[in-house]
Length: 184
Image 1 (cartoon, rainbow, N blue to C red):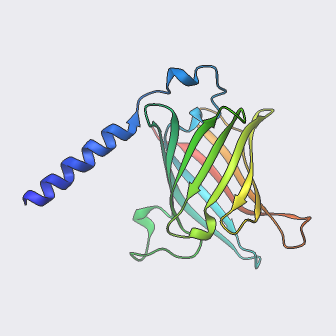
Image 2 (cartoon, rainbow, N blue to C red):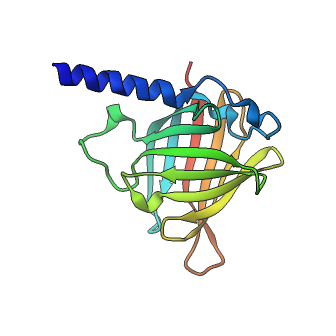
């Protein structure tokens, strides 16, 4: 029983030290691209396979300022834990985290997506505002070029799409599309 109590105390201390209620004043001059994500979201995701198969699933996103308000981190989950049929992950599942930090030298946000459930989806990108949208460019773990985009962002909803460069080196293929709705 004592070990469990210590583990719970440590987890609580870790979470309290990680999360922050607001962004750091160091970022006051920075375009707050991802602040809209703070909070919890229900999502509808469509996964487009390279073979043409389409899979639809529901999920959730939870985001917070972290690291003394110098970064935004999310948990990006689909299918929802309550909808999983087995203890493990299926191809295309996400139980991942994204870390977003501002890069002063590039005057842009660095985005690092980490998905231990499907490491081939891990990604590194650079994000900037593009009109009313947020445009991100980078690469997947295997160095395939990718483009991610948030569009139609409101206080209560967003549309996200992810494209990868096809093997022909010219055609961009959508591989993920998400529609988010704020919870609460």
